[in-house]
Image 1: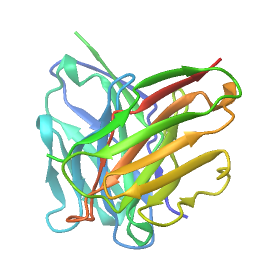
Image 2: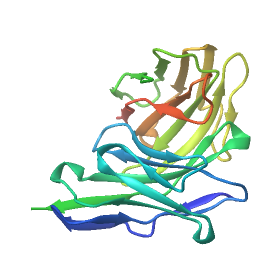
Image 3: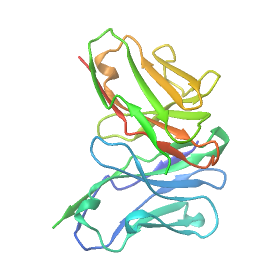
Image 4: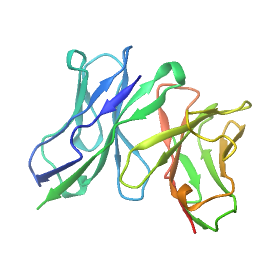
Length: 114
Length: 116
């Protein structure tokens, strides 16, 4: 069965420091991969997505992610974190044979300390 | 960009009553919409896939008679929580897949349901 693992429930980084959020997936075919961000009580905002092509994907707000097939990973990175980046981040895999429904990871809560 | 409007954003209802949540794609047509549920401090779990003009496909363990889904047009899907109980209190989020680009679905802002 398809699954997404985000091993870090909480991460705290200092403002200005670099960030990497981990995501591993289990899926038999070539995956469609997504990273979303959610502020408390809000819906989801798409940060970036990977469908094919260049394995390093650029997103909004200075985020990027790298698809590594050999490691079944799609880690999210940002070189310098801002206080406004504090939120919860979800990695998801799209199951294309079921209309691209999404299977989400458990989420990682990012705290930014000044 | 594609906009999905979900209404209401918050609703409080009494036990035993029914609540309807609407999900609208404002600037695109969506044959397929998805309904997710998010428990506090947890991830999103897909409840059902809503298909315009046909019956919804429910995920295992989701009661279809409890969570009624109607997708009567290419821009509107509704989720009705029937005979609501406190354990139905949750955050419900819909997403809609643009017919012109089926690789991505766009999310609404969610509905916080509280059953008292």
